[in-house]
Length: 130
Image 1 (cartoon, rainbow, N blue to C red):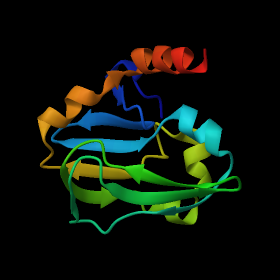
Image 2: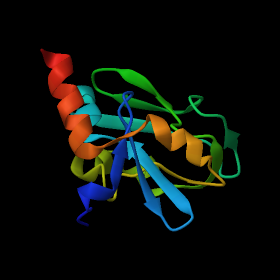
Image 3: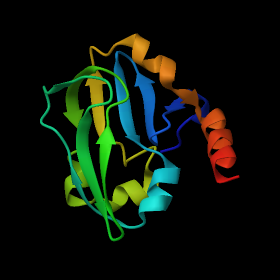
Image 4: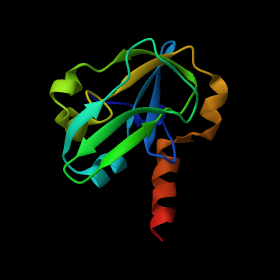
């Protein structure tokens, strides 16, 4: 599936958000995938769990490391990507498409203030490497 990258918002902690109707689809960015390497396990919350912005909502493990994932907005997880439990490599193959992690409802719009457009995120990464 091709994602319109102009609709992708990113955080400095390398999560992305895409608005889909009343929901936010959240995953990890291509940069995070590249840093992690081959992803072998993902732990996600139960649907119905409510989180505050910045709280850990799951763990992702690769052959290199384990990383915690932080919810970029306050809201309720209403759906998790069941497919990646059995096939976590979908994140490596298509992080913005089939490799999404959770969908969040009832989120606080104010939480989006700390995000940046994908192009700005790429520029941010370039500056971090200097």
